[in-house]
Amino acid sequence: CIRDSLTKVDLSGRNLSSYNLAEAKLIEAILTNTNLTNATLTRADLTRATMSGATLIGAKLNGAILTEVDLSGRYLGGLDLTGAVLTKTILTRAFLNDATLNGVDLTTATLNDLNLERAKLIEAKLIGKDLTTVKLAGADFTRAKLMKADLFGTNLSGVDFTNADLSSADLRNAILSSTDMTEANLERAKLAGARLLNAVTLRGANLSYVDLSGRVLKRYDLTGTNFSFAT
Image (tube, rainbow, N blue to C red; front, side):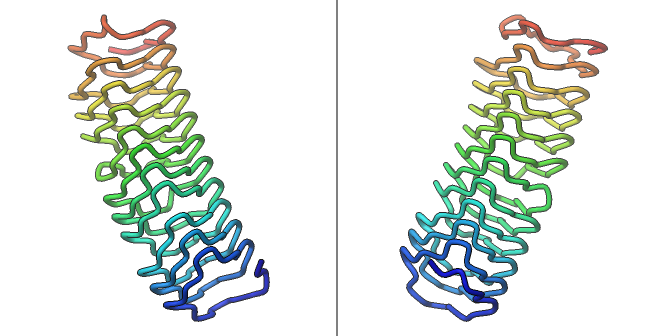
């Protein structure tokens, strides 16, 4: 295990597959085209590291600090990033499908064209995020914070929003099929044009102040749903 400071070290092109870099200080390190396959980067500090072309398949990134790191186009599918710090991290066109991001704060991260299909984002924070270009089908947002998130026209098929906070979120024209919103907070959310297809669960959800004009909700589970001041 390497715990000494490797600040600004140039490891570009190196084969570090299966290396144990847990808790390593890799601040501003150059990791261009570095092979980090199956490497252990648990709680490593990679703040502002250069990682273009780096291979991260199977890497352990739980608790890693990835502040201001550009991970555009990187394949991170299936990786465990539980508790990772992604402040101002650029994830444009990255693949995080099937990844675990429980408890991660993505509020300041750049998420354009990101693939989050089937990812676990339990208790994650995406407050006010524009998610209109993000692939979210099958993702788990249980207890996630999505207040004022922009989900306009997004495919939310199979997404789990159990106990999630979607207050004031924009869900207009979104596709909801087999979407679980059990006890979700949808207060003041925008649902105009949203396509509520089969097996949408709204049991115990808060739909107060939501405009439901023209909606036929008879076939959905509405047990305990709060419609206070809904129209």
